[in-house]
Structures are given as structure tokens and as C-alpha cells.
Length: 276
Length: 267
Image (tube, rainbow over all chains, first blue to last red; front, side):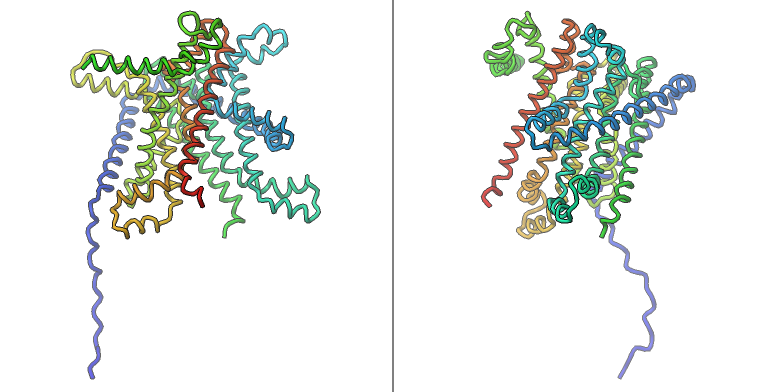
């Protein structure tokens, strides 16, 4: 009887087969090349066209514009959130008058472009200056910033009402019944049981809405508000330097990505009890 | 050749003149607003606004197929096994979903202008190049639409079980045929609600091209508002026209949706 007395010495694994050069790989490399070329091109453009004088002249404008954008979006989202509460309840109410009115409001603000609404408020209401002066409201509508704030608030209220309504209606019926079976008053049941679950569902759409508002707020530059986009347009119209837009693009991208990651973290944190 | 071209253009414009919902023989403005500011012809702004309506609708309709096709390929690239392809597709969506649409429009409009100008100068052409506003708007809106569309299609792709592909391969269909006969019909059904939302967003984004001078609804009503000093009425009409477009497309989408679900209805 024979048996093995020596072990086979350890050997290197066989070499991995060469990766096939597929069409996907070709296209991937081409597209990465395009992105790389664009990045290098933009970088060279910025370095080549770098002008400290322009930077000191328009740089602070960008910062103040960023402040205006953030203030406008922040205020309108908060105010819109407050208006959206009665709107969402009116939309869900059994009274046909309320639900129809709220539905018409939401349909109008979600069905027309924000830019048209802004023009309607700023130029349209501005054409009634005599009446507005008589009512003592002219100081408000004279300023483009106020008009932008009003329009954005009304617009985001419509979207947020829909988000809230969808979230509240997404809470299963059994939760209502469970609360009723425990003998909880309707108010307590709503605030302690329905709303917390609805807000978790609504968290992601709220984040998207804020991002949409930040992106949408760029249009106030058209009605002469000097937000980030307004400052950009001003810098471009004075210098005809294409870089102006690239810097604005960079800032907007940074804000949106920051917000997106913050929201992803927030969502992971707030739903950690639902993880299995 | 040019005779044929003019004949085709004439025929198309004659056809549009007849079916024109605003200023045609049975148009709303023609029937109900004959003696107002909205009258058609030289007396009022009806025909200008009707032209803007046509421009807005055709811009959105022209952008849709471009955005859908590009978005489809980007969705494919995002689930490819090739890392570089995935990465470049992700860069594309991050970029164009993060930028404001207005900024994208300006970047495309002025960027294309500078690019083409430099190319023409390099070739030896002396003169200024003007990019067509319709084309620039189509490119910018198409880029934004395709970035969002790829996300919708990607999540729709994920809703289709692996077994569907395997069944296709087991039947001896190659990759393209499997995609065409088995995956795509289900994909459309799953993605339709998301695509409907994107279409509405596209329709609203077309208002932005009025900023670069394309005579769309908003531009035409702005001109009318400035000339007549009746801003509120004209912007209200612009809102109304956009609402009509939104309403018509929601009708169309519910029709398409019931068509896409026709095989499910029997069950």
C-alpha cells in the first residue's frame, strides 16, 4: 500500500484570463475620456483666464448671491410648509367645496411653470399699481424679492401639500383602526401615530422638493433679483467671461450634492428602527 | 429640390392653419375673442400667442424622443458590468440633475456658441456664429430630461426579475431580441407613471427657453403684455395655456397607460 509522504508544494494560482475588450468597455473608456478632457479643458480655461481683478470684483457678489438664494429658498420652504398644512387637510376633507378648492389650487401651481407664476405676480400684479397703492400693499409688490418670495411660497405650498397628503394617505388603515381600538382620541392618534409614520414616508420627497426649489430659484435672476444666478448673469454681461457660469455651476452642484448626502444620512438615521 | 421643400413646408403650415386650436377656422380665439386683444391677425395678439403655443408644444415634443433614447442608453450604462461605463453615466446624471435648468440652458447656449465659433475660426471662417435658440433649448432640455429619465428607467429595470432575461436566453433569443420582445414591453409599463411626471416637468421647463429668445408661449405673452400694458391678463392666458397643455397630456398619458396595461385588464 502506498501513500503520499510529501505534500505538493504550494503553487501560484493560474493567471486570470485577460478581460475581454467588450463594446461596453470601449464606450466606457471613450466616455471617461470625454469627461476627463472636459475637466482638463475647464481647468485649463479657468487657469488660463484667471484674473485676480475679476475675482476680487465679482467674488463677493457670488457669496452675497448665494446668501440671497439660500435665504429665499429657506424662507419660502418654511412658509410654504406652514401653508401646506391646512391645504393638505382641505384636500383630504370630505367637504366637496374645500377639497375642490384645494385641488384647484394645487393643480394650478403644479401645472404651470414657476417662471410664468413669477411673471404673473411680479409684472401682472404690478400692473395694478394704483389699486395696490390704494390698499397700502404697493411697498410689498414693488420689490422683486418680495414677489419672488410670495410666488415661491405659494408654489412650494402646493407641492408640499401633495407630499403631505400622499404620506398621510400612505399610512395603512389598520393604524387608524388600531388607534381607535385602543380608545385614543382622534387628535392624539393623529399626532402620535399617523403623523410620525407619514413624516418618515414624506422625508425623501421633502428633500427632493428643497433641491427642486434651490434649482428653481435660479429663475428669480430674470426678474432682477441678484441671487447666485443674478450675480452670475451680471458678471457675465460685464466681462463676457464664460467662467462666470462655470463658477455658478460649481456652487450649485456643491449645494445640491451636500443637501442630497445630508438627506441620505438623515433618512438612514431616522429609519434605523425599521432596518431588519 | 427647393420646390419640393417649399411645397412640403406650405402643406404643413396649411394643415397646421386648419387644425390650429387657437386661431384656426374653429379656433377658440377666432370664435370667442374676435373683437378683443386676442383677435387673430393684425388686430390682436391671438395669432402671435397661437404661434408661441405651437413652438412650446413642438419643442417639448421634439425633446421627448431625444431624451428618452439617451436616457435609455444611460440607464443601460448604469447597470453595465463595466466600471468606467457606470462611472461616466453616474457623473452625467449627478451633473445634470444637480444644475439648475436655467444654468444648464445658459451653459449649453453660450458654450455651444463659443465652441462652434472656435471651430469655425480654426477652419478659417470669419464671422459670428449664432446658435439656433430652438436647437440650444432642445439640447439643454434633452440633457436634463435624459438625466432624470435614466433614473426612472433604472428603477424600472430593477423591477424586472432576472428570470425574465434568463427565459429569453433559454428560448434562444440573443440579447437585443430579449430586450426588445421581453424586457422593453414590461419596462414601459413599469416606467410610465414616472415618465409622465418627467414629461410634465419638461413641459414646464420649456418656459425657460423664452429667456434665450425663442418665441414660445411665455415670450409671446410677455411681448404682448409689454406692448398693451395689460400684463395680468396676458400672463394669466400664458398660465391657462400651460394648464391646457398639462391637461391634454394627462389625458394622453392615461390613454397610453390603459393601452400598456391592456393585457393585465383581462386578469
